Length: 87
Image 1 (cartoon, rainbow, N blue to C red):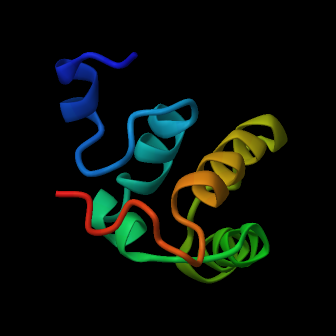
Image 2: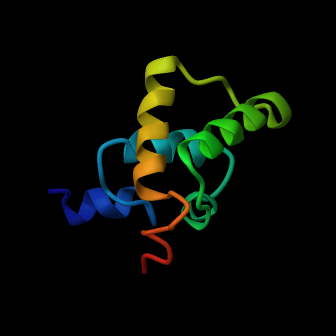
Image 3: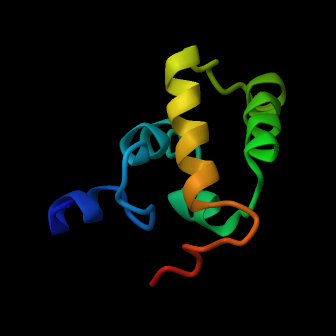
């Protein structure tokens, strides 16, 4: 169970496995709220990551890290947007 400090560390993101990797990969360029506002399938998130690398200059993720992030996003920020608005 995440502590209050761990939850606060990742802002609006759901404190779960993959939150840390997602937070640091995404907030290098924008707020975590941009992530929390989205609702995409795993494939949609994969396409968005590809677009960010190709068009926005995001550093390409290592395959293992990309998998962790996609698993996290698909579980917590899918098309039903189960965690938005969270607070």
